[in-house]
Structure formats: C-alpha cells, structure tokens
Image 1 (tube, rainbow, N blue to C red):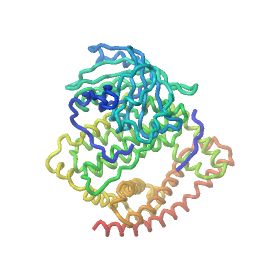
Image 2 (cartoon, rainbow, N blue to C red; image 1 turned 120 degrees about the horizontal axis):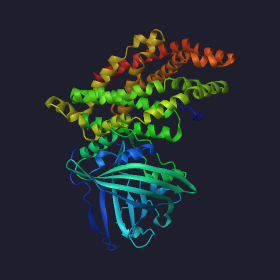
Image 3 (spheres, rainbow, N blue to C red; image 1 turned 30 degrees about the horizontal axis):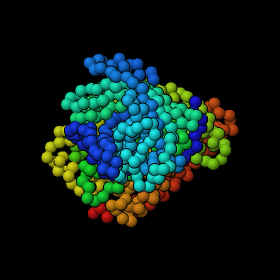
Image 4 (tube, rainbow, N blue to C red; image 1 turned 60 degrees about the vertical axis):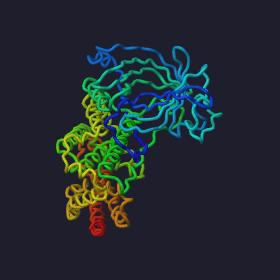
Length: 531
C-alpha cells in the first residue's frame, strides 16, 4: 500500500525521425594518432523494453525465436565517475567490461532518447587488464570539464545475457534479454530488460519486431539504463525531465509536430516509470494529462496527415485513457483535499488515499500485465519514429506539412479560441467544467509557442493558469460529492469538514466568472494580434 505522498501542484528540440537508416551500425575502425591504438566508434540505435519476471519465461518460449540460435553468457561491468558525478551529469556513461579474452572499455554519450529508442555515440576499445585507461580515447571523446585523474569505480552490474541475431525484413537486429543485478554501496537493484539493437537496416523493422513481441507478452518502452539504476543506488538522482522544445519561426509545421509529440512521449514514459519507482499517484495523473496533450497535438496538426493516420494514433491514446480514468477517478479529490495546509485536510486526504489506493493498485497491476498497453504505447512510438503520419499523404498534406509553423500556430490558436465558450463560465459547475479542456488547450499553446508571440500571449496566460487551477478544485469538489461510500465511513466531524469544504463551490464559481472576464479581454487582444 503506498504511503501518502507529498502533494504539489533530454531536450528534443531537433528531433528528426529517420525513416531509412541503412547499415547504421557499421562501426568504423579508427586509429588514435596519439597512442597508436585502435578503437571502434559507432552510432548505437537500440530500443529498450522493460519486462516483468513473470513474463520472462513466456518470452523465451515465443515462436518468433524458434528459428534463431541463442547465445548465453555472463557480463561483469564496472562503471566509473568522479566523486561528484560530473561525468554522468555531462550525459556520459563510462564502463570497463570483462569479456572472455580480456577487458573492453566503453564510453557512451547522452545522444537522443524518446520512448525507449536510444540513439547515441559510442567509443569502444580493448584494454590490458581491468584498470581504466582514458589515454586510449580520442581527443574530445570525454567532456573537457572532466578531470580524468578523479575518475573512480562507482558501481557494478553483473547479469546474464541471452542473445539472438534476428533477421527482420531487410534488417539485422540483435535481440537481448538481460537478467541480473546492479550493486552499489551495499545496495542492489534488479536488472530485467529486453534490448533490440539495430545492427543494419531500418527503424521500421526494429519496431516491427518489438510490436510482434508486445502482442504476446507485456512490455513497456523504457528510458532507464543500467547506468541510471546504478547512479540511483549511489544517491545521484539521474532522471531529468525533458526540456520543452524551442520552436522557432523557421521550422515547418511537420518539424514542430515531431518535436512536440516527441517531447510528450518522453514525458509519458517518465511519468509511468516515476510512478512505479515511487508509487506517488500524481505521476499517473500527469501521465493522463500527457495523453490528453498528445491527442490535442494530433488534432491541431491533423490537416497535414491522412485521416486514417490521425484516427489510428488517437484510437491508441483513447484506449489507454479509458483504462486509466476509472482507476484514478478518486485522485483529483485527494489532491485537492491535501492542498489545504491544515492538518485535518491532510488527514482526510490520507484516509481517502488509503481507502481507494489499494483497489486502484490491483487494477493498475492488471493493466500493467495486459500486453495491449505496451503494444499501443509502442505503436505510438513507432508512429513517431517512422513518421507514420506520412503514409497515404497527398500533395495537399505535403504542402501543409512544409508550411511555416507560424501559419500553423495561427490556425491552432483560432481553433482553440473558438472552442472556448466564455458564457459557460457564468452558469453552474457542470457548465464551467465543460470548458476545462478548452482552457487546458489554450494553456498548452501558450506554453509551446510563447516565444513566437508578444505581450498579448502573456496577458492571456496568467488568467488561464488561475482559471485552470480553480477549475481543478471545482472538479475535485464534484468528485468528492460522488464518493458517498467513502464519506459515510468517516467520523461525523470529518464529514462535516468535507461538506464545509464542498460549500466553497459558490466562491470558486464567483472567482471563475471573474477570471473568465479577464480571459475575454486577453482573448480579444490576442485575436487582434492574430489578425
């Protein structure tokens, strides 16, 4: 049972999904002029999937593996960093691996990572003995800010690797199941994951294989590396929230869509992984919000894609939303109750979470074990990375895709503003709440594109933020009034406190009406700017 959490309210700016990557893993043997030693430099493209212990045996019995010979061996790795983790903060991972005939040292850069698909530079070379030898790396491989003399062992990973070399379509893919432990400072964490590395060919085949696996066993795209697990054990928070893309006027509509959808896909995986690491329910609520953002982006940009493509992607999002919404129906009320600093509100919020979370967790575990969840998220990931929205495009779609993002933003703002019915804010709670999605969509636009507009957008953003917060509280009050079973179990004094809180709905509606009036003024100013 999760404890009551503390309640609180990889940059992808240049994302470009590669459609055909021929011979992407053809390593280049390069000679280090300074030392005369040879090293291998390559670009690593791999898809990482988390898998549960219960599903590992099912994976090994998959029919798709029957025609390929498996190799199994053990790997021992020591990861290095400075005492203050300067290397990992620079986005690099440095390790020495014991192999059958000696040792190999490897340096990986941060690269790009969206929804489990990793693309990064890698340097690899044999070394004499188990000690790190940074002099063998070419100049500039290690960040200039790193004092190489201060590199020291940070943690180890010991795991068994079972490997298949798969031919999928026109591609060669190394499929790997890793099972073992990461250890640091007397603590340990489990390693159990699938990796699909593209040796030669194209990304479509990589996802075709992953999707076939996901039809049979529950998997999820994972952005958590073995190195990240080790650094967590060392007390170094490794997860970094993705940065919002910096959309500029020179970008095309398609380029902006790629960047923004990639950003939300990163957020989606981060929220899912963060929940299972912490069991703080706010991460799942953020997961739901992110799904809504993705659906909104598809709606904004759907003019550049065939209807079948936008419908397909939207159907995946809607299926996931429909699974999660009943599980999280109680959470907004719990969050809102805890916003009050008074201890009594915290206690009531705690009781609500204790009452609802256990049942919700059971449903969540069942969802996690449903292969369809991973299949649909992987389908969205593949759709992004292989530019699936281009399939079936006609000349008009392509023309719209190539237009300036500023033209597309004008359309999005016009559409979002027209969807906002400010008169509804003057009615009852259900009328006001009907405008919640429209308010959130406008806030998304303000967040994404504030650099492309001036003061008028700032004037619109402030009342929108206040309005969304008040609508959130109003929604929570509506949820609480429907939780009759839970309310009736409370002591009478706590029931009285809840009913007193719900009566603040009148004040909230008054504030919402006033904010709506400010919003109308900002809306008029922005409409003038758009014209």
